[in-house]
Length: 316
RNA sequence: GGGUAGAUGCCCGAGUGGCUAAAGGGGAUGGACUGUAAAUCCAUUGGCUAACGCCUACGGUGGUUCGAAUCCACCUCUGCCCA
Image 1: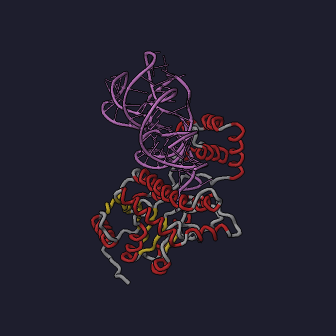
Image 2: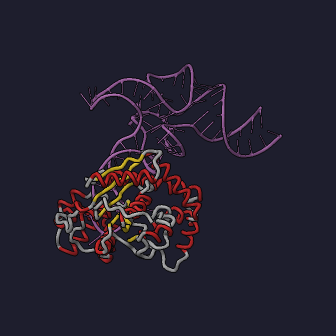
Image 3: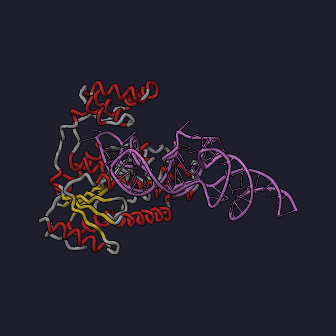
């Protein structure tokens, strides 16, 4: 066991970065040094038995360091930010109460955002209202709904693009459930607590990140992604809508349905993962107070760990 | 060797005389984002320019025409069929 290092006294550290950049290894290495437990900030690792495609930490690592927010729901269940926040809050309290450090690590930007800033007071989604709104869209057309939103909540309507069905639905749903415009509710943050996180960002040259993605996908295939997807599909409960669009799963499912050749599906996984990375980069630009570590091409995990420890020490 | 279909922007692909720097899709790039977020949505995508605009472009060369990616001739290459 590595020695616990007492020189660093941040109690909550968040590691963010593009998919496959190396967050997992750093989180693990750092956890060993800082007597920490890890919270996964990832919308897909929450699903049990979706192991290979979501690149969960391997069993050896999970044996050494307690991981939270991994394998917390069935693939047939839907999951969303509010569940994430609720479970994470509990895990954080729990870890801190045992005198240990929290290391949150992941790339789901919206979850990161809520972790830093909280969610505003609003009701969760209501499937009956949503179904009715979707029906309205099908019969009346989306523009009518956008106009309806404009009458009850002009501010939200001006911010939400007329084609953005999901946001229009949510805004109308909140209006119907609360009688208040979503734009008004969005003003009141419940926990604006960004400051108590020490945020480390991992970054590499973009070309290199793409190469790592390709390599990771190749390894996923070798580890048996195809069989993993097959056995998920063979389960009695069907995959939830969220789980079945996960990158690596959606494409293999399309292949098994005869819509894509196998090689074509793998290529798609690479493309979609690269797109994810791109979207993540865009998100991360909006986060302030990130201590970015630019990883050189020849750096190994030890280099990254040391750099992270330096960054922490420098901030003391 | 003969016949036939074709060659379009990074890729696929529409376009059969002017409204075409050229539909649409993909990819790429930039952006938005608060309860499905690995979701959803937007913008840009030949070059130069702040812009008017100019230049280069639809396999090659030449021709017809006021005007061609679109018509004609020859050539090159590719797919398929017959020998």
